[in-house]
Image (cartoon, rainbow, N blue to C red):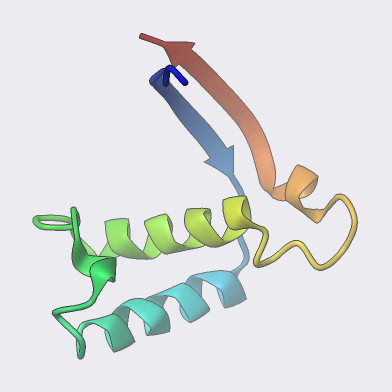
Amino acid sequence: METQKVKTCFTITFTEDQYQHARLYVEDMKKHPQRVYWWGKEGKTEDELVIEQIAHRILSGFYNNEPFKAGKQIVKMDSATF
């Protein structure tokens, strides 16, 4: 099977509770520097790590315990193949 690369940009919304939960998660990950979590994250700011965690959880469905909730949080998506 041939694979393709697609670059996608999502515009999301999130709550203060989601932000705080992600911030605490990143703080906890700092205690475990050898975890897979850190692969590819060198040089990122703490705020970038927190926002990445929020986006990951939204896109992975962690926050989607109600029908159409992801549709409310994912405001826009732009994609391009290359």
